[in-house]
Length: 141
Image (cartoon, rainbow, N blue to C red; front, top):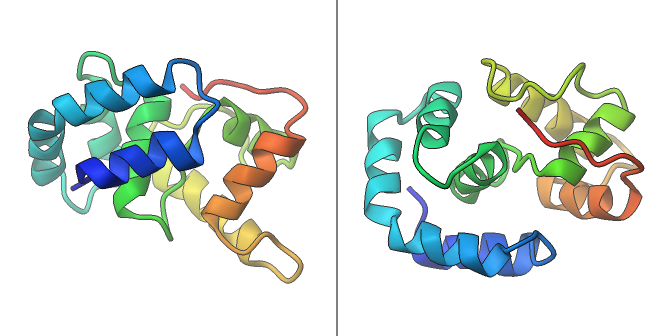
């Protein structure tokens, strides 16, 4: 389950340029009890967890994947529009349909790409590279 410090890290360090980042950060921190209850109900099932988070008011796919990433920094990707667009650009994922039961599979594709020889090393490196090199930002669904 994400902590307030992890939510601050997500929006202040990883996604500082996100539109209304501070507003999203503060809303997530305020709603942590509800968010963490969803995490508790869907532990170990990232696709189901994402679907349940997206059903909450004010949490879309990007923020939902970001909250999940806070607790799974080595395995699950925070799919913002740049990360999604860059993964599409590199043909790592076939579409932007992250919530269609694809979250864990699409994350594995990016983790594999980042870890390859000469790669960026990890998910955070990929997200930062995507922010710099994505030609066509594409919102995840």
